[in-house]
Image 1 (tube, helix red, strand yellow):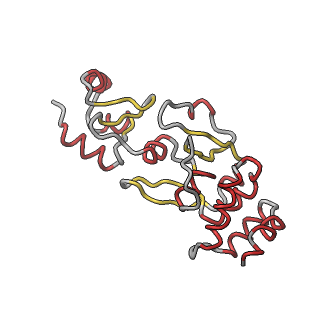
Image 2 (cartoon, rainbow, N blue to C red):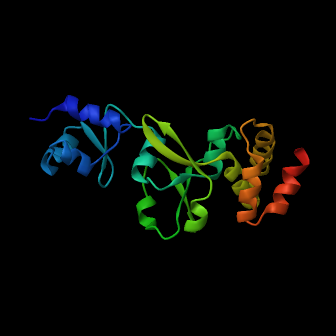
Image 3 (cartoon, rainbow, N blue to C red):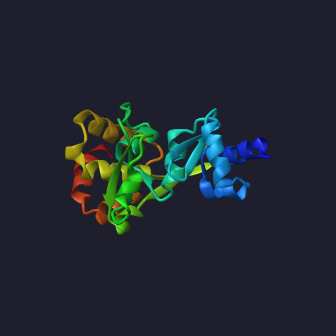
Length: 198
């Protein structure tokens, strides 16, 4: 007998997304999981990951559960910090350049992966919680460094808004900004774009 209350509680604990192994721990066999899929109780997100059909998980939770090492990046990070009003067409995430690229091909949510050297991937990581699930994101100062590094790939309006809003942000950390700028070899660019406002 499947205890749906127990299962629902477990889904709630994990932001609405469970792995096959977590369903197995709850006592569900692969046959029972298949039956719940056929009955429309569960929905498959991708191989090995499920959500309840009556409790759709947020995009952030799905990304954090499917790709725990991914970091919210560029325009998606700008949106989180309120540095842009433009909603990106895809969730931009930074991932290890050596990771298996096929794993990031999912139908929903739409993601755009940026493959980054491991030593750069770890710089400036912060986190926040969504429905009890921890999501990695680059902090404000690292995000602005990324915006400056990829100036040519970002629309001018998005770029300008990001710089202006960062400068006005009480939570910015100029010391960290310059530390990151040295790591990414863009110190002069930071001085040109940000320094004039300080």
